[in-house]
Structure formats: structure tokens, C-alpha cells
Length: 113
Image (cartoon, rainbow, N blue to C red):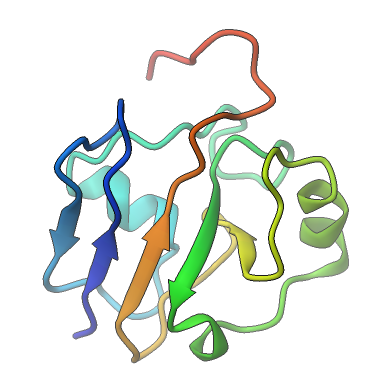
């Protein structure tokens, strides 16, 4: 199984994190949540917001292309980069990933799930 390396984020995981056995076929967001990495996900993984935005630093090409709907939401994301994805829509394939969670989201208040 591939691994997901999460670069340090001042609030979510200050030391960074590694998910050693990320299951293929599961979204990055669900995998992080299942491993106690509390990434924002205000729309409950339904591709209706941008709070789970991540930048895929390594392994981007292993992900399927973003849908038009995801691309529309990404256009609203804070800190958008060419390798940005909504982690609720980016499905882990068979390659290791390194992701960065942007420091800010467009939410004015943090969700408490």
C-alpha cells in the first residue's frame, strides 16, 4: 500500500505525519481522517466547498484528473497551485503521496467534527 506524507502544518499536525498503509481507492481526506489527522471538511466530503484543499507535492500524476466540479471549487481555494486538489475527491492510487495542507481556508470559523 502507498504511504501519504503530510508536511508540517502549524495547527493540524505541527510535526508532520506519515500514513504508512494508505488504502488505494480511498480519498486522501478520508484516509487522513481515519488516521487522526483532522483536516477541515466542512461539506462532509461531498465536493461542495474548498476546506479540504491540499497541494500534492509528490505523486500528483498518480491521481485521476479532477472533475469539472472539483476544478470549479478549486478556483475558490486559498493558495491555489497547479498541483492543488480537493482531498475529498483525490483518490489514492498506488503511488506514495506527499501533501501540504494550506495554512488557511476560505472558512471564517473552523468546523468542529
